[in-house]
Length: 275
Image 1 (tube, helix red, strand yellow):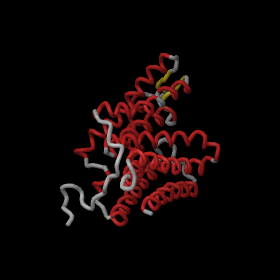
Image 2 (cartoon, one colour):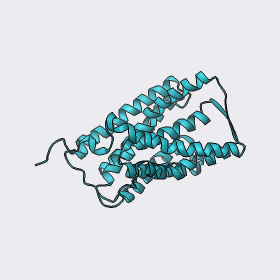
Image 3 (tube, one colour):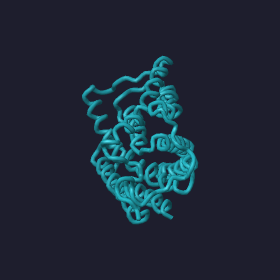
Image 4 (cartoon, one colour):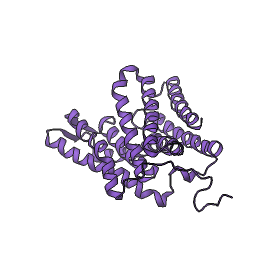
C-alpha cells in the first residue's frame, strides 16, 4: 500500500506538471527558461514533501532510514557516484575520438561554463534529487523490509521504468517506447546497484547528475557540435552503465550486502532507544 501510494504520487506529480505546462503553453525543456526553473523548484519541493509525508504518516519511521545523509556524510558517496559515471565516460570519449568522432564547442567558453552550472542546478532540482529520493530512497527502503536487496533492486527498477517510460509515452506517443524503455530499465538497475553497494542515496544522485548534465549539455543545449553521434552514444554514454558499478566497488573496496531483509527501526541508531 505504501509503495503503491508513493509511486502513484510520483506519477500524479510529474504528469500533473506536464498537464499544467500544456495548458499554459510553456516549454519546460528549453534551455533554462523561466518555466524550466519553475518546474524544477516545484518538483524539488513537492517530491521531497511527498516522501516526507509518506515517511512520517505512513511509515512512522525516521527520515535518516532512507539513506539520504547530511552534508558531512554525503560528499564522499556523492563524489563516488559522480566519478563512477565520469571516469568510464572519459575512457569512452577517448575511444570515440580515436574512432573519428568529434566534440567541438559551439559557443564561447564563458557561456559553456555558465550554462553547465545552471544545468547542474536544474538537474539536481528537477531530476536527480527528487527521483533518487523517491525510487532509490523511499521505495527501495520499503522494499528491502520485505525482500532481499537484489530482488528489491529489480523491483524498484521495474517501478522506475514504468514511471519514466509512461511519462515519455504520455508526451511523445508510443513511438518513444523502444528508445525509452531500455534507457529507464538500465538506469534503474545501475542506480539500484549503486544503492546496494554504497548504502547511500547520494551516490545515486551523483551518478544521475553526471549522466544528465553530460547528456543534456552535449545533446540538447546547443553548447557543442558533436560529430559521429552514434559513436559517442555507444562509448561515452554506454561505458558508464557497463562499468559504473564496478568502479564504485573499486572505490569503496566493498561489494555491498545483497541478501537478507533489512529491518526499518522506528528510531534511527543514536536517536532514541525504542522501549
